[in-house]
Length: 197
Image (cartoon, rainbow, N blue to C red):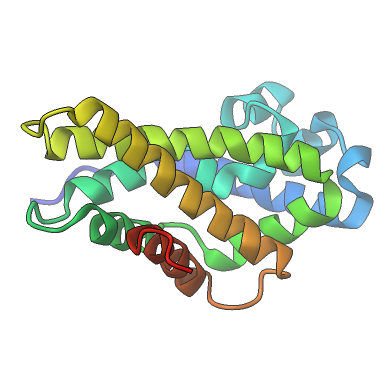
């Protein structure tokens, strides 16, 4: 039997996607600094309060593709076979990213073009910490019987999250060309190799 459709959740997601598309279009046309939340809300036909229900800041629109709602990653990791190593589980889970990669590409290009490198880097560190928490929890629960698992899980989470974020940053600096999946795999595999250059 199929799960019941949550109409409220569907409407909320549609509103969020509409806000994001409007914002990306306006940022590109008018410049990030020249667009206010009031402008975005009005153009999308919603209130500022509705905007802030979906995005805590204007900057969050540019990072939404992989910052918010990391439930998808936790769920994908939980579905991986218990016999699989952490690297393969993380790579397979990341490849299940549920967002439109063209919208992700547009947001990455706008991040590079519209907001300063320091500002973007600071926001990406927050993203990295979120990824690290999800991966740490996965490793800790998957290997709960391993001695010293807390340290091992935290190091695994921190290192793999850094590899993922650096891959995305590298892709962005390269003009968002190339296969992001391959760049992510190369980054994770560099860690897997013990950083053999």
